[in-house]
Image (tube, rainbow, N blue to C red; front, side, top):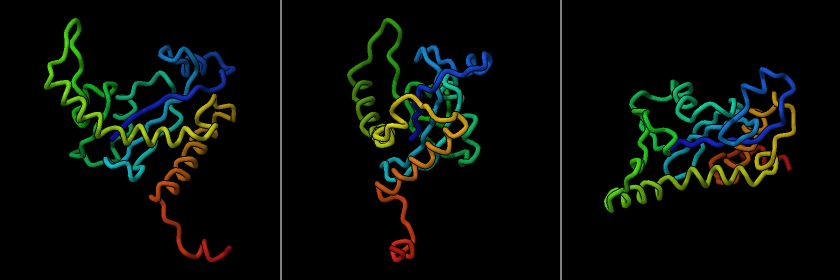
Length: 168
């Protein structure tokens, strides 16, 4: 499962950097982070952090999918429509409505996808991820990956060697 989210950052001083990181969707300067997890939410597979906010979810996925098998299928949200490797829910047509069967399919789809939303939320309990990022922007990726490691430890996906526990 794949999903992305934006985090507000300090306004860059450089005009070119301001344009690069300004997200019209959020009306702020943002970093974008993409997370890929296993279907049951038991493991964080891949994290891409620190991309400019205006970059679309699908572009972010396409730029970073080369590390996966080309036959690998993913589940995404409506931001990923148009990618062959990603299954997405059925989009409501303009000036139309979904049928009862389509609504049922979307409900089943979202019940499977809820795990990726839970993993994003489990990272957002840390204030450095939840609030505006005030640290040096060059440290963003390092901070996000560290927090992902803490989350993996919390959910039991990261198993530390027994020697570490014996030191205490």
